[in-house]
Length: 459
Image (cartoon, rainbow, N blue to C red; front, side):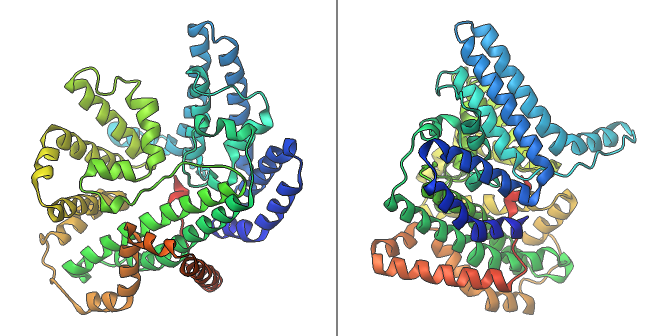
């Protein structure tokens, strides 16, 4: 699917752009809708039916929610129907086998697994379709009476596969009326190339280091190799996901859309609370507005505040994957953020800036170990090796080899994960040169390399 999606973008995108800008305004959403379905069909033709079904369900329920807006009880029933259908599809295709395995493990049954292929991007577009009916019910967005326009929103190919999660209320007006300009198109191309460089030149290259270390036996590694490995993954997942978000935002601008930002230099954070305000912003805001606040937020006492936090972080972990390591990963952050709310933030405010960064980085490294290993025993062994609870050498020749071969991309990754890189954008000549080099090197890399994972496709 990775090869297919990139093939679509580089081969078919010029065709789509030509047709889109040649089409009259009233047909532009139709062009986007058909193009998006072709994009999705390129990798998973069967699941187009699933997406079309979700679109029809939410279109009908949105109409009914609006029709009975004067009757809250009746209107709410259609919102509930929409949410149940969407979550049922998500549960069947993403969580059915996880639930069956859990039941089998707890009570010793032998229920056969469904082994359904996971529709790519289902977690993203399911949340988007739910946001539509909820926003209409809350009167935060107008009902969409044109099913093609709603279909274009649900299937919008720039951000279909890996986000950001575009909530309906943020682009409701843009779906119906938007302006495409040369300046915006140029801005979109620039943003797309920045994202492409993040993904292909940094994430893929640093990801090869993590792939080597993760696939090695821990007993054959050194302590520094383990730390270097998880540092590499920290950079890989950031540049992989933020790179795709940049490409999506850039593609959106080419077609006249303004998607909200999804990352804001999360690795400069000085607490975990701050980190989650900067990382995957669209997911955090979705859970805040559609789960945390409806549960009462922080308005009903400390106990319910902490309860609501743990519910949100349990769901955040589960959203990322149908495995207990993701649940533990989410609850781990729930514990840390709760502790920060209770007392840790006050301590951190008094601590030196360097210590706050060190604390945040350490917490994140531990979290990425949980995130990576579905078998918790493997993750625990990795952590034991990192913190000296296994008889491993501090340093070995393998670490020196990794350091020698990956030092440059590692340093580039660290610099580009901070606002320092923004300084180069101010000089237009240097910026244009950087974009040209990124484009040339990215194309060369894609042609030459077979290592091109998209980490968030599985979500």
